[in-house]
Length: 242
Image: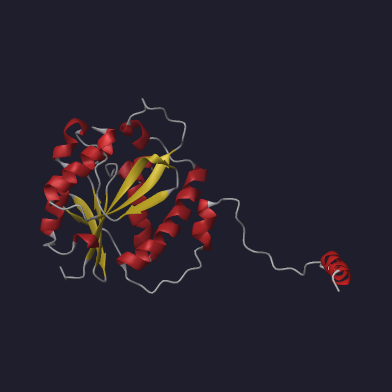
């Protein structure tokens, strides 16, 4: 691989043929790289049995969809995920800047459609043996670095309680309305993809970002305002203070 190559790895549910048109919440990371594949014409996904993943590449950008689930052998997954990622990078002969690697992860804490890019991997000690703490700890232990990019995409419908397991959330179907929400999320996240991954000169007014943050926000309307009342008040003040 070239020194400037970039790698995006989608971590989520297991890829199954019967799930192609019936996506679950844990598939959101796979859906995002599929979106990038179509938008930027990466071409056909190629299955690599060496790393049990689908791969496509274009202009030094590599997209990877692991076939195995992030939740596979959940009780022992902390011993598998980081090692699998390490094997992928070894297979690609990748030994470049960790900032050129981005993990895409479904986020059970973040509301549906919300997303966040993180410039480094962090362990939140207050959460203890939390699912994401174990995941990130395993990645750090296997890759010996914390400076990897992460894109978290929210899949929480806000009606879950603390007893709802990650596995249950990952396998809950996505509604038709949520498909539209996630599509807008992909468009928003694509701005970052252009800037940081493709290094494109991407210019935006950020209106769409602010609209996502403040849903009531609407484009500025241009119309001729009736200023007669204001002019009358100004005239009165001028006469009063001559």
